[in-house]
Length: 113
View 1 (tube, rainbow, N blue to C red):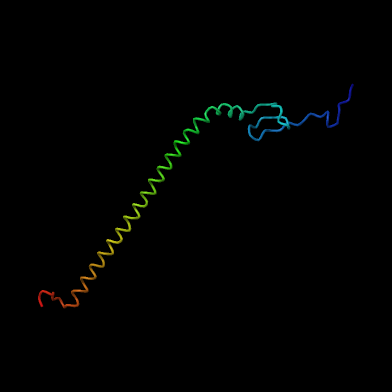
View 2: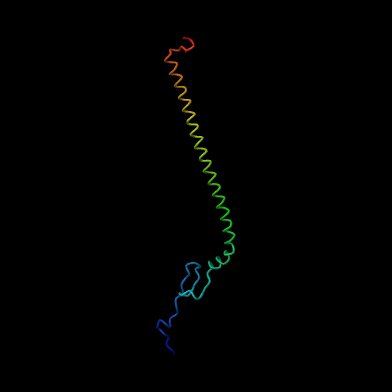
């Protein structure tokens, strides 16, 4: 009976799993020994890639428009809040000025003098 070779030349090369497709391949990548289910999935979904890229572009444009509109609406809300605060301050100041003006004249108006 012939002896098996025990040198590095005679030993079978170990298979490695491809990090991308998870198939069993030769260490040098020259041969595919076992096709993985993930590889079949990648092959089946490869046709969808152009459609998905187009949809992504559409959704990206929609997102940009929405973000721009939201920024405009935020500016509008900030402006309206500032105007409302200013109106409230003016009303408070007007009430205080009238009270001060009447107290100094002891209730008499300028027309009565």
